Image 1 (tube, rainbow, N blue to C red):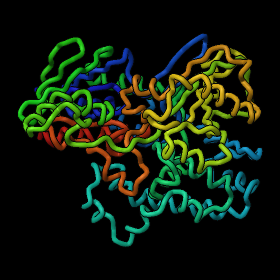
Image 2: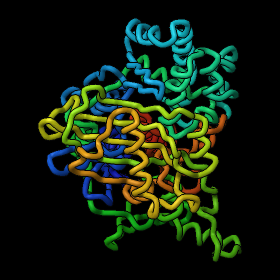
Image 3: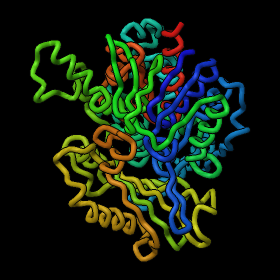
Image 4: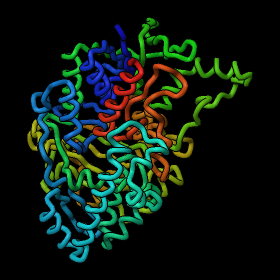
Length: 502
């Protein structure tokens, strides 16, 4: 019987495992951490609970489809509740706006700050929905696109994809108020990009959230990983936690075996890596790369990361504070954004200068607003996230961690939410921690940068072009980052495995 190995029990790995096991294959997952979930995790301390990793869930239908593929109902494993408001936005000028999925309620919010932009916002949503209609079947829900994919798009729709101008240019053509432009531009960060560099096609992300809504799993975001793991095990998947993989073995250009960190060798038919693609090539295939270099008669003293691929430009990373607060802030919602006064400067610092912004936009998620048991009575659990550059030698997080933590808390205080005297427990996560905990190359949360019109075509394929029987799944491969997209990558990886076995 064919046995498929999966490296990593993140959302992509679990999604792949469910679909392969539902198709009758024997599947084993090796996860180096003591728990499943990958970037989706949870931490508990002093009566507080935090989700770490993803915090905004969209595209409910993707999860319903996954469970349906195994003949199960999502509702029997997970309770997804709509979040209202979707996000509460705070601006430096004192403006506060609640983003709503209901069109009439959102129009009322916009009228309070920019009445002329109501029509422009509605036109923008129609524009973003059109991009989703055109690109979804080709670039999101199907196998990785090729240049031939354009021929599946009717010619009149080619230019409606809007891939040659930036997100910001498209946004500015629809709305005029600085507040709405900043709000809509923020969606570039969902895939680790800049609205001033990423193609306008990515405005589709706004459609997914602003029209489709935001969902919260009762109990916390980590409940998604727990539900997937439960279903996988019910289908016969074996999950080994605290069991990392040291090397992917290759013989005659084909996957042969895995060498586990405990020294054990296991042999199987195929392997799906749920690690960052670059990390997989750098660390798990280093012997394959070195042998290939020697066959070519090249020096191996200063090898590139892989003989086949240079590391792609990275998406952004993040700086995270987990704060247990002994006070409640009724002015804050479940999801909150505190905007910086100079958005262009913020993205220039991240993507051009390799520095964390000195005046950053700050995201605060407080799940205790919905799940009161996530904090002691009278308190709140704050997950604070600031976009940061991927790791390189231009910024020393070890030396500057405390100073940047203080800067972020001062910025929050400037908005009227001074928690510095109310923190009873705290944990700081820098890009180094994100890289170490998840295997993310340079700590980049979303893999390759989306700041290119051709990013969708340059994203690593789910099927290795060099090694038969090796596949990739997760946010660093097709179709991209975010929990729904990673779940869909599991669908694609499973389809490719089944195709090749057939």
